[in-house]
Amino acid sequence: MKKNFVIAIHGGAENQSREELGEAKEAAYRHGLDNALMAGWHILEMGGSAIDAVEAAVKSMENNQLFNAGRGGSLAKDESIEFDASIMDGKNMQAGAVSGVKHVKHPITLAKTIMQRSPHVFLTSIGAENFAREQDLEMKSEEYFKTEEKIKSLKKAKKKEKDELLKDTVGAVALDMDGNLAAATSTGGLENQYPGRVGDSPIIGSGTYANNEVVAVSCTGDGEGIMRANVAHEVYALMKYKNLSLKEASQEAMTVYKDRIEGDRNFIALDPEGNVEFSFETALMFRACKKNNDPTYLAIWRDDTGEWDTE
Image (cartoon, rainbow, N blue to C red; front, side, top):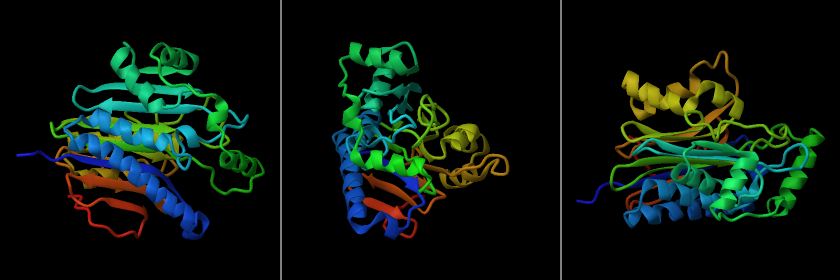
């Protein structure tokens, strides 16, 4: 009998209204989410690994300038662009992470390559880029990543015309037919950030975590807060040591130490039974998931309806 296979993705979480996002852009986001979801789902459906599925889904979003990763990454104060990413294989708990790279087309692939071909977990900046070149990964000039929309957005941010800066992240979690879990996260960082700033996304246990026995998690939101709360591992720990269900652990992880740690915490989580949680405090989360050959669940707004049996 064929075992369950599941993939869930997020393209970030924001506090935009429907009017601010607009119908045309909303449609484009839905199309982008569907493309990314299916890129990963097809790998699982063919019997491929969870680690390859999450990489494929995230790569699709890195190619889409709507999302704050890769091609659509946010610009720092000096109009430079720096990428962070991480990936974790729940089967063997191997992980790869990268931060501060400027020319790598697919930071998530670099993170996976670090995991598979280097003795290290985390490489940064020039060292990470040199490793990418040694591994013949695709590189791009900075101009490839500097889209007109992101340049305009940075100018507005510098003039303080925006109440909320772009801080989105993209991510994916997957369960393959062999029962393996994986998680991946990629980001262009915080708009108008200081060059060299690193958020939660490349930090294993903070923005990304996967363990076959318990859960796979990918976070998005306020990087500084998520980092301090160690959110991804918190979900794991609540399930592992308090024996909470995925839903219970996700709800508790969103609120633990809220009296001391500010900022929104948003994440997707998947357990070994194929249960999925989309946890977010913001007005919207770009999200989608698909289990086996069941209908796709794709949503943006908090009140979006759709058939998805989480638990």
